[in-house]
Image 1: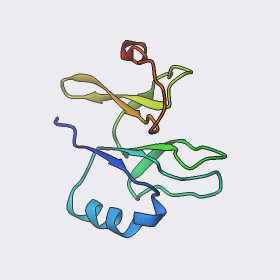
Image 2 (image 1 turned 120 degrees about the horizontal axis):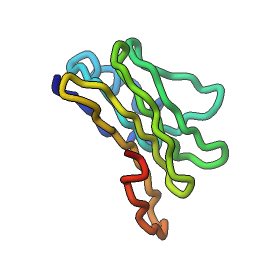
Image 3 (image 1 turned 45 degrees about the vertical axis):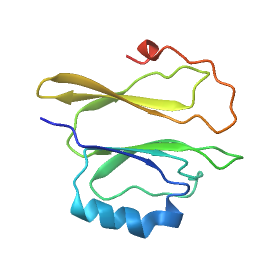
Amino acid sequence: MAVKLLQWNARGVFGHLHEFQQLLTTISFDIICVQESFLKPGKEYCPPGYSSIRSDRETAKGGLVTFVKNGLVYTECQKPANMECQAVKIRTSVGMVTIVNVYVPPGTDVTPTPFNELL
């Protein structure tokens, strides 16, 4: 099974919702990794046919959301405390695949975290 993946820096899901929904009618993605979702608690959104893993920011814009197509078997991985990211392990016909959704804001002084902590 090939995994169809979309990575999108949305700069606000609701601000580009029409374009996003049009894209989803033309291509069927298994995993959608969104950075800068700008979603907050109480602002619900999940495309039909997907489950969502959200990391909202309470005070600033930003935020991450990973949409996983219904029917895929997945588990969330524990993320490093010093990294804005989400990671999921997806079961495929050839074994487990780990998908990591990471956002590093502009101007952030970052010391790279070993990604093997997420595997």
